[in-house]
Figure 1 (cartoon, rainbow, N blue to C red):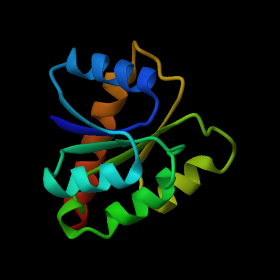
Figure 2: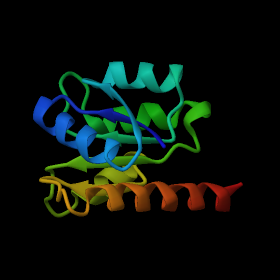
Figure 3: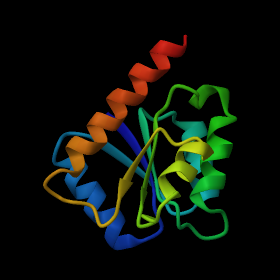
Figure 4: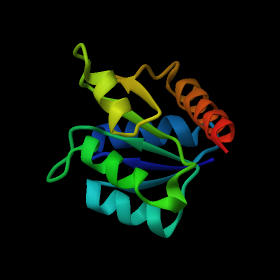
Length: 129
């Protein structure tokens, strides 16, 4: 699976890349929202992992923009964030994310959580067409 990771923290990016590449996924990276939106437009990924705490443009705004791009309509967007307060999941889903994974991520389960979110997102898109 081709996965675009939009994450500004180098340590988080390294860990996500390491865990997902170990499972055979291909990773592309963007370090802010604008770069992530541009990367998604150029090479439509199979899945987008989106940090919510990004510089300049937060992940909620990025998710809303991604959802306005017709070519990305079927691409699942998963928020991966340390925002874990009551209501944060709802806010991420309302912005256009299909799923939500809390940081700190669990290295033992992260790849499976990502794969499950991607599969659920694809099933939901098929149900809407």
